[in-house]
Structure formats: C-alpha cells, structure tokens
Length: 88
Ligand code: HEM
Image 1 (cartoon, rainbow, N blue to C red):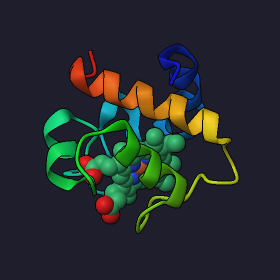
Image 2: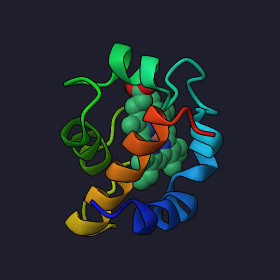
Image 3: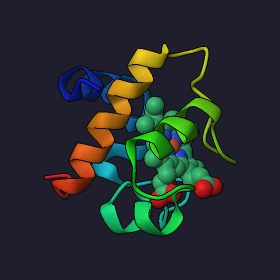
Image 4: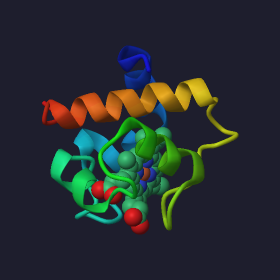
C-alpha cells in the first residue's frame, strides 16, 4: 500500500476515533505496536488491519463498500508504518 495516500485516508476516515494512533472509544485498543500485537485478530500485519477495516468490529464501523480495496490497503500500510514508528 501507498503510505502517503493512506495518511490522507486516515485523516479523513479514522482520525475522529484514532487521532495520534489512540482510540477514543476503547482506550486500550490503540493503534500502537503493542496493542496491535495484543488485540488485533491475526496479529500486527497489513492483512489483519485490512480485514478489520473492511469488516469493522464492535463499535468500529466497516469501511468495505465505503472505501475501495486500494484505499483500505493504503490506510492499512499507513497504520502499520506509523505503529512501527511509534506514531511520532
Ligand atoms: C480498533 C483501524 C476507523 C473505532 C481498530 C484497530 C485498528 C483500527 C487497526 C485495532 C486496534 C487494536 O485492537 O488495538 C482503523 C482505521 C480506520 C478506523 C484504519 C479508518 C479507516 C474507526 C472509527 C471508529 C473506530 C471511525 C469510531 C467510530 C474503533 C474501535 C476499535 C477499533 C471502537 C476497537 C474494536 C474492538 O476490538 O472492539 N481500528 N479504525 N475506528 N476502532 Fe478503528
């Protein structure tokens, strides 16, 4: 995925709940490396992020059909790269 394109998608669709890689609804389920290792189904991979963004989970809405597969791949690449970088 294209990390730069993913950043714009993140700011437009995800930052309301996940600004700075945090989570305003379920504070422990952040987008930080350790939280993705602990909570994300399938572990800290681009594929796992794509699955959750496409299908949603509990209070997180599904983006499949609202974002294209390419947009979802790009935002997943951005989330993973940002987690690796510590959301600096
Ligand atoms: C969890 C990504 C939009 C609410 C997560 C997780 C990821 C993620 C990777 C797993 C984090 C973890 O388990 O530690 C994204 C992306 C979004 C997006 C890339 C935009 C395309 C949103 C929005 C909301 C939201 C708009 C609020 C309306 C949540 C909640 C969880 C979560 C509540 C925890 C779900 C659970 O395990 O019960 N998100 N998210 N997300 N997200 Fe999002």
